[in-house]
Image 1 (cartoon, rainbow, N blue to C red):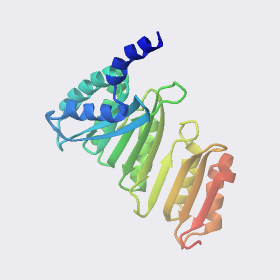
Image 2: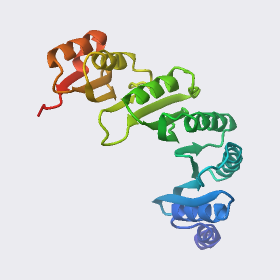
Image 3: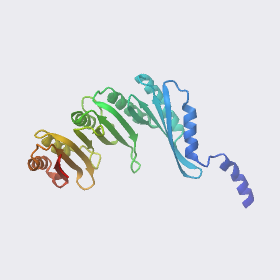
Image 4: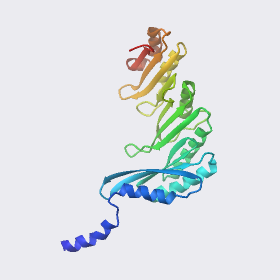
Length: 264
């Protein structure tokens, strides 16, 4: 009986790739090759165990692809990932990369956000990822803006149902930054619970309204929810800047750090 069981199992083994992730990535490339308006396909694979694995495929669209065509391809990709649940499908169009999920409502929401981001001249590029946590649907979004003023405005727009962008219905981790190496710089992100970091922003704005800020980081923190680091120009009054920040965000006082541009 043991020999028979082993023999019966052979077709199952030989019918599956040992490097499953690699096979899924190869399938994605073959399935999407030659698709109109797709100029490149990039894949990554994760071969977790023999015969087990996952893959991610990104279809990159040519510049100027119409919104209707992006929507059409997103719907095709949604059907594809619904039939291939070990493959993550993503689209890059007009500088924004987004994940397409099997759920139509969630994909429609992401498409709407893609449209508003690509129509926003304050936004340089972005990435919208599906990032479930503890079996709860969740998005992880990163956006690059031209300067600190644009960065804070885009962040507020995306988190508070502003004039340009509608927040996604699921929990969302959002980070908006200026380009790496640009001065003045700003990085702002949602708090530890994916909420709007009102006090962190208030601390930054209180200092920026009085002194030139050359760099600031408003990050999530597991203890206080958010942490604030602000660098003011040499000409700024460091002590007074710190007082302003802590007065604007009393609950974050211990998590606020203000330094000058010439600090070691």
